[in-house]
Length: 138
Image 1 (spheres, rainbow, N blue to C red):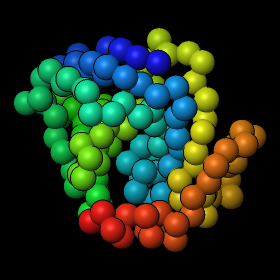
Image 2 (cartoon, rainbow, N blue to C red; image 1 turned 180 degrees about the vertical axis):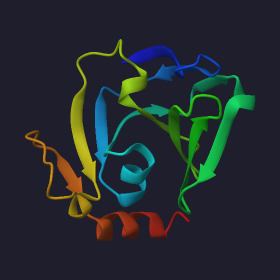
Image 3 (tube, helix red, strand yellow; image 1 turned 30 degrees about the horizontal axis):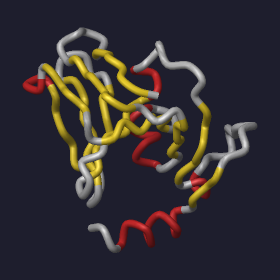
């Protein structure tokens, strides 16, 4: 899947993603659930992302390996950006025109609360597996 444009709720921030992976991920970590009030459904957008209105984007370093960006006017969650690679993961909901998406992976699966579950069969990574993966990257 390629090229998609979107914007935040108020329109101050416009985003163009040159390449969007049709396999989206879900993160169940406490940080993601606190940030959005639910698990984070994310599409991988790589590094070819253009952001207009950067003066309205606030970055928050949420871990040693990534930061989160949001619009300072309307609060729209815009992205999760990896420090080492510069790759963006963006909320699936920012791109309503995308179709044929498939849930591919669930991160921090051992942190998923008991009050929800998904019927989709996906790959899963636990906290231990994720920490081991990022240990070499921080």
